[in-house]
Image 1 (tube, rainbow, N blue to C red):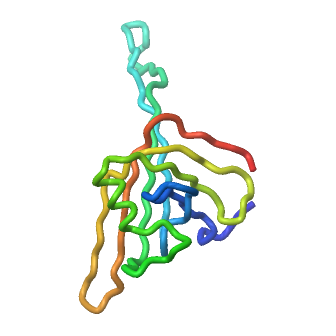
Image 2: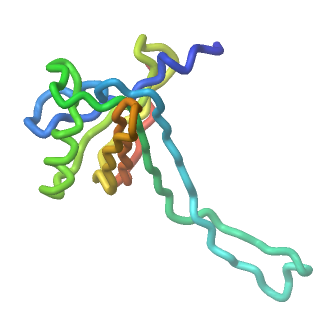
Length: 140
């Protein structure tokens, strides 16, 4: 099923605790999953590299429009900042807004948060989350 990218959302736990909520006014969200490789090449590899799968990692990023008044139902940027400064892990769900297919869940730490406001431009935010522990795929 091909879907509209607008339906792909990132929900993050608010700093006050409680249920995950979508990031306020998000415009772009992404999930990146990586696997390190371990080189096991020997003189018997006939000049080709032999690899083993190594450690897995993942990261997420999001950006959107900044709203200093906030939206009660959404996770607000100031809550992300609180968790970042407190070095508190967030939990997240990366999925379609209308459940279909599968969702990705896990936890991680906010590693960057930027708020930008250009002349005669809408203020924006961007954030990055580095995964910690397992990334779980669940069919829904």
